Image 1 (cartoon, one colour):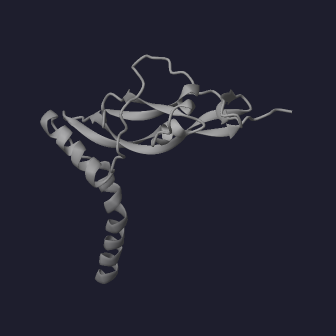
Image 2 (cartoon, one colour; image 1 turned 135 degrees about the vertical axis):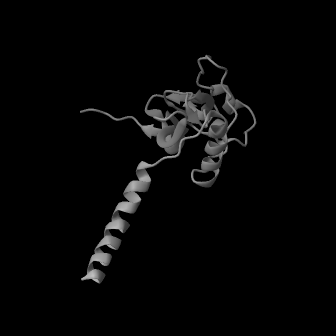
Length: 168
């Protein structure tokens, strides 16, 4: 009987252990918080390399037809028929607090004609390609300090050219 009770307790502990540990999140003071966030991002949520923002803050980007008249660039965002620029976004109370995001430059897609001229075609649309990315959100603890909660954010990483959806 004792062995059966011990087995039941062990099984119960195995099921409740993960539940209990999920509820407990460590609280950090202000000086520990940044260091803890950086360590967690490195070990559990590796971050992609950041692109430098290429759009001026607040500037309204335009579709860059002139780029195709210049020598080809090595950068995909400039060579694409659905070109994009990078803008810096900020998320307060998140780690990292700023990140680069792709912003499509054209409503349509660029088409190179046989004579070498370039036009923006409205037969196609430029649409952003999104990727889920994990950030750590700073949340206040009941006893003071802050905990770090992983949150998923959809981030635009590039743009692609798609057919226009027609409604019949």
